[in-house]
Image (tube, rainbow, N blue to C red; front, side, top):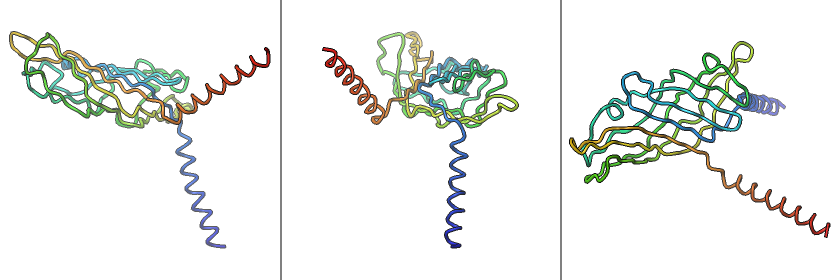
Length: 221
């Protein structure tokens, strides 16, 4: 009997932890976008936007990329040390989470690291044949992203499930006189791809709808 009671106690503890974890609303971000500009010393060289069903969060942030995204020059054949890493948010522009609109200047904050990882590199062409060059490499965002939204009694935690992977494309200007490359702009995009199971359900649902329509047409003939 005691073993049974101990088992019940352990089960309740585990279920209670699960219930607490499940009590934090999780929202799926179907696309994460980062527009990266030249770092001119102000630090706010990135505009970000996270979108999903009933969710839109955007703002300004920056990265200390003084080794590649400021005014550094690279020669043909060089491998630039591109990276994003942890970003420090300076301003939110919009805050819609789960269909609820929050004030971006005080009712939203991330409590986990807002970061993106660049997973590849590239080499500048040894023989440039144009005034600009664009290269894309694999990249991903940290997931999940935790935060708080609201104020007073509506101050509640949330989680954002980020897309699994994406790409980071950078464009570089080439100066034929100095024969050097210089960073111009970059764009990171991560998009959620429907899982095979979800696609299967969609196909099955569409097939059922078509079947019902055909059946009704046959009955009406």
